[in-house]
Image (cartoon, rainbow, N blue to C red):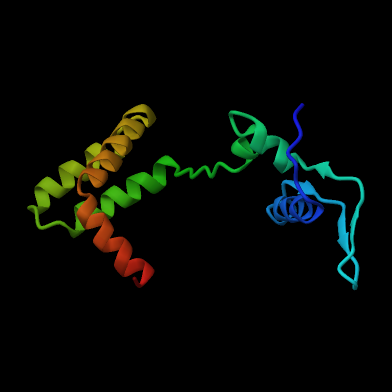
Length: 134
């Protein structure tokens, strides 16, 4: 291990900075006269995860999973079909086809729909701006 040649003030500032980000418990106290006291410093679980190359458990626990069931996807597609200007007989055929899609086909269709939406990113950005009020 090599020495960092930090002053007490620098070490305290660095430890308190890490503490503010939840990476450690600094053990640093500052007296009313400005005197620094160093107690036991400990690393937190967040600090350990930060040091891990893969982000540790924080990376796993921080994932947001959105699940839409088949009926929700079908209803979303159905509402788009209904709102379209295509002829009524074509709407009926499309709605029937969507209703009869297997779960695997519906997943594949949903993936294609998401990709198609991302291909129209300028439209998505405009929507996001209006949605977020930016």
